[in-house]
Image 1 (cartoon, rainbow, N blue to C red):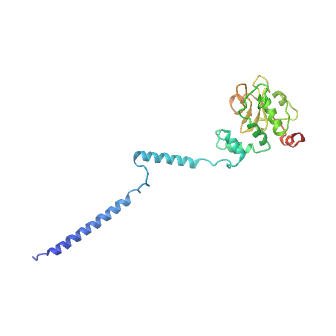
Image 2 (image 1 turned 135 degrees about the horizontal axis):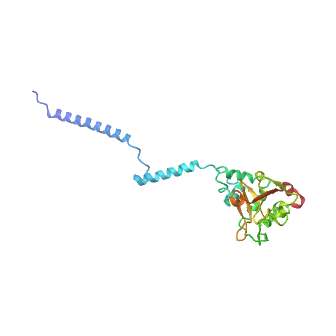
Image 3 (image 1 turned 90 degrees about the vertical axis):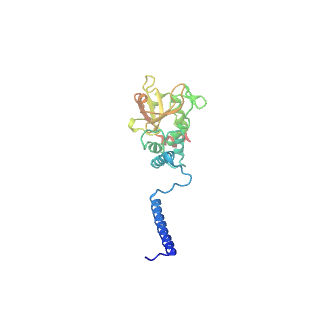
Length: 242
């Protein structure tokens, strides 16, 4: 048998090591490609990090599902109602804020918005001014005279019987209509102004202040006794209102 030279053996060994190294490198590349991509720098890993990522994903999903606002931020009417919490509490119905917003953009919007300017003014029996406070009929009288120039009688029952006001059904209500209730065992003992979406603004009682309430609440629903409508456009255009 011929003896193999030491130089040849060295070359064979070197070739074997090179082949083994290439195979190991290829295997490492394949394993690395099978792993998930490394998180961005600063990302927390582990169970706590995964929990934070899940919470953020839920927040992002909720934000994406949130409906677009009913009006542009520059809309004075929507901004006014939003500042007073009326768009967010219109009802539980998804489209109720948009409907309320639309309802106060008709010919009665000036009257309704004028009334809302007095939210928080205290109730005073017999009161008919901001300085002295309002009772229910003093409030409606002040708003109608100030905004459209229509002078209403002083008492709630007299306003209900005013000849120039038209009786309307509950399902016909529009913003600016007067709504009447039996709160003192009298048919027309309380009055407020309808603002839309089943809500009305009024001066409720001693110890309270001008506020918006829902006519569909059981207390008001069973005490509703009628509604009246004035020709607000004609009143606003009359010489007396100028």
